[in-house]
Image (tube, rainbow, N blue to C red):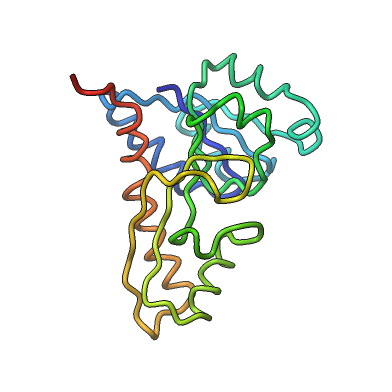
Length: 192
């Protein structure tokens, strides 16, 4: 699997994925490109430090042209992992990577999904509603926020005194422990 990771910020999931697969080439996943929609995203430097090529996309070209497909083709990308990428994926990109693009969401979908439900917004809503658990959902990407078919979910128990920040830390541990594993499983050839 030749993987591109799309990010908008710090890229802690991207870092975990890159480090895991660079240290274990036998897993069959090579991160060949990191794409960001923010020129100052710290994930760009993190990727460069790991010799992963980077690309910054501008909003108008991302939505109004399909030039990104040529860039992805140049790197022979055959799978995309969204890791904190906050833009809605345009139809041409969904069509080009059917069931070959994943997103990780910091909640147990279908709860706490949709436009505006990302990062701290999710954890604040979980806390405000007094939930006893939260978790992660890894799902295929379609043309709507957080509505693609689920690939994996994992839950974590919450304590009533947990703050949104503490919830975020618990959920992030689940993300770091599981996203790369799901990608590895999808990259593995089917057993005969």
